[in-house]
Image 1: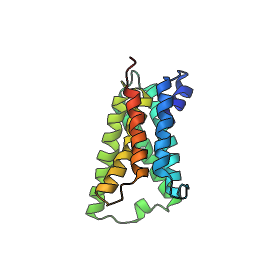
Image 2: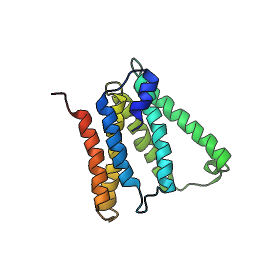
Image 3: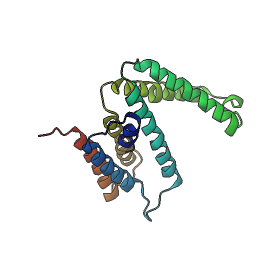
Amino acid sequence: IFVPYITWILTKQKPKLIYYISSVICFIGIGILSFEKNLTINFGDFLTFLCAICFALQISTIGSKIKGKNPFSINTFQMLSAGIVSIIANIFFENATILSRSYDLKQVIALGYIITFNTFICYSIQTFAQKDIEPSKVSLILTTEIIFGAIFSVLILGDKLNLQLILGGLLIFLSIILTELKKS
């Protein structure tokens, strides 16, 4: 939802009006999914909001700088720098637990899977796709993660399907569909 605005700041190119409309609709949908019954946001949702700003910066920066560059080189740099920053943060904020604890084979396999598939391959695909897809469209496609998270929470965890879940998901989906509509 922040990408059209950050991209505008970085590139000085005003995005299409439909991206602004879609980002507002998407924001409302995410808000409906995130608000608790007493209209508060829990700490986890607040952290997710901060991460959304960071991801928007990442998507916008890549979108504005990717032209003519090798997406896999860019992604490798992203992964190495994120890894180095994470290790430094672990050393300072978590007393170097990454180095001081022992790991069993299941943990090593799980960590390797997350690093390889959930991070490196997914970001490689995103970076490669951003050579041809506008940052605002990429960000809206990535918001489907919250829809799939909600669907799987119902199917796998047995969460209740309710009006809040349906309405929020439909608004997010509508925001994506709007960006795909062609001018008549």
